[in-house]
Amino acid sequence: MKTFSHRQWLGLAAVIVVGVVLFWKGEGSRETSSPARSTPAAVAPSTPRPPPAGTDQSVRRVDEAPLISLTDAKAAVHLKLRQWAERKTGDTDTENRLMEELLALLTDDNAAELTQVLSAEERNTPFGLTALERWLKGEPAKAARWIAAQSGTTEPQALLVARALLKNPADMQAYCDGLPDGDWKQSVLKSASLELAGSDPAGAINLARHLNAEAVRTDVLQTVTYDWITHEPRAALDWITRVNDPALREGLYAVGAKAIAATDPDLAAGWLVTAVKSEKILNDTALSIIESWTAQDPAKAAKWVALFPAQGPREAAVNLVVDRWLQSDPNAANAWLLTLPERDKVLARLKAEQDERERPPDMEE
Image (cartoon, rainbow, N blue to C red):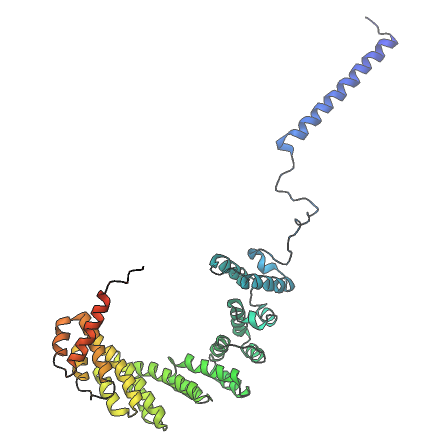
């Protein structure tokens, strides 16, 4: 058996040590480069990275809105409303995007707070009106009292308050009774009256009676009457006949005649002649009835117009019937026209208008 000297044993040991070192270095290199052993990409680092420079932390993505703090929501609202106000004319894409992002920040929980931090101008934007409506939905009395105390209130805001409070008529009555006389109270009363016109005309009329401005009160009452008479003509007529103010009553009769003319011009004409004495109201309403009547039955409209006296709206009425009837039945219109004493004047007008249409345009020098 061959034996090794001391020097040979040392050399062998050195070779073994070098081999072990090389082996472990190779294994470590393969482990590091192996995809199967690398850190998965989906695992986030334990220390969060800072946001890129210039990132506005108060503006979050729309889909993160429910998690945003109230302070950040207020800041984001002001920023986006400023951007919305500065949008370029016609840039509807940017406008719509900003408004969608604004509305996404709004919740039932923050509607009151966001509404109260808006300026008068911001409250009158689509976002401001939506925020107020959202607040009124949850706390109608509180929101209505708050907006009443603000400056720069508008009719759209009054309409939102009226709609919210009309869900309980007692709330509306109590609210209006507690308001001082002024523009806001009048605006709420007007909005509430018009809102009730279709469902509760008697209630609408009761609210309208408290309007101070005569012109506004008359306009609202006529609007309510027009809508009422198209649905319940007997009830509306019964109310009109009991109106004490003669001028108001005649105006309401005229409005009723216009409403009836849409379905029964003949009845409307008879009602107008017997009920209205004011020449101006009579003339204006007659022309409105003729316009509706000519579209439905020009022969009957023409027969009525032929009975008009020379004064008043006769000339305008004749021209209206002729012009409309010529479009649908020229032969019948011409035949009727030839029976009128003013036929020569009307024919001259028609010829002048025809010549004007056929005249060639002036040549530029």
